Image 1 (cartoon, chains in turn red, cyan):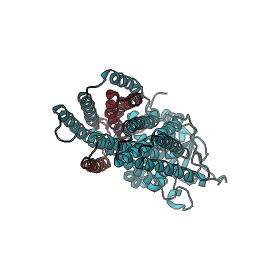
Image 2 (cartoon, chains in turn orange, blue):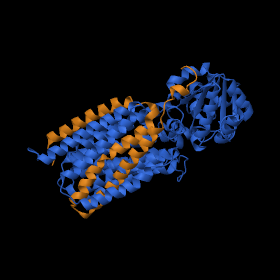
Image 3 (tube, chains in turn blue, purple):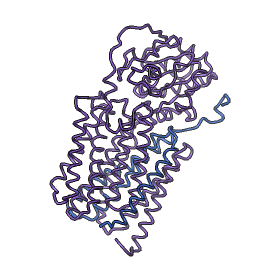
Image 4 (cartoon, helix red, strand yellow):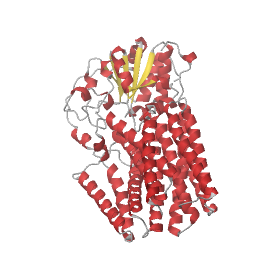
Length: 104
Length: 464
């Protein structure tokens, strides 16, 4: 199992990643808050790796069944999340300079 | 896992490291619409590396994994193709799926590891399962309300907060018991059940207008539960992804709660319903002025600067494409048209931007509240389409108003305000809007889509 030093490592990683997250996301334009949410949702579905291991190791019926459902749920988030984020971002277009009659 | 790692394991860890970096870059590139699509590629690449690495690591039963991956893909594709107006409920549903994955993995790990589990590990596992469980049902409830399968009205009852609080305490008591006595495995299902029930009760008092905050909050919970899962599985990648998602959700919740003038603790405890309950009465008929589409078109075409204020009503009426035609017709006449976006307009953060972008309105015309508010006094016409509370001047001046202190769009400072609205019914939140009785305000009664369509016809643009 986990020794206390790897536990401390994990806490360091969590805190530092949290700070990076705050800094990076603070700079996301409010314009893109909806795609941001669907993107983080897709990234969060990386939890699928834990579920894959559960299914693959086949340690008990319960863990395999739970793992299987978990892989399905997470995969649908990955596929659906990236897909819809891409669809949304494709829609965001700037006004083309030619189509702009007046000065800004 | 101490000491030497095998070559494969080192390779896998390196793949995870690259994936973590790609995830951070992915979010960084979201800062601007010009780089945002790189963000998706980075995220996808990171995901492929991470899943590939995981499959490499363990000699496992690949057949079952493949079936699950294919099934997930089959479900995921339609979820990626929903209409833009359905994005809020789709997002809520995907929070539920993400949390479901975390809760199931946590539960499976519990039964595999107990009773030989360290106290710390059991504590984190409890956090993972409680947060995950309440996010599953909470998000399903939110999705149900947004899809209007469930009633959108907030349901409140006496002692609601007390009941919720006691439930949470009960879950924590079980968690502590499990930490101290991991062999009492029969308690575990009760902890999960309480978390699931708590999620339902948390969302019952939530009304539609509070959805942006709630969706963000659930997003944060989903992220934090995934980070907790990372601790349990000793997966740095998962800790990082969970921390990123968690901080994203929390930042959005803070922005949303500020935009509604709620304290963050108020949001955390789900004390939403009260505001709605406080508002009622004030039925005296005050005079309002209304205008026809012809008059509205005349006023708009005589204007130099127009600011459109969209709200949830525009989404409900699916009026965004007609609004685009209006934008085109006015721009062609040399009118400067911009859109003022309130942070909580719609049902989720950024909802209006996505709908307007879908209708091909250039994103540099969509301006945030703080940036555009100073421009209303120099604006000829403010056209409010399906927005209500976010334009209510009572929030600035009337200390007795339930929304007093909420930052609003100062549409009343424009020379003329036109509000498209179905009727004088104060609507969902039940708060009367003094804007409608001002001398410079004109009510345009009708369905948003139909009314904007008639204005466009009057302006001679668009196709009828």
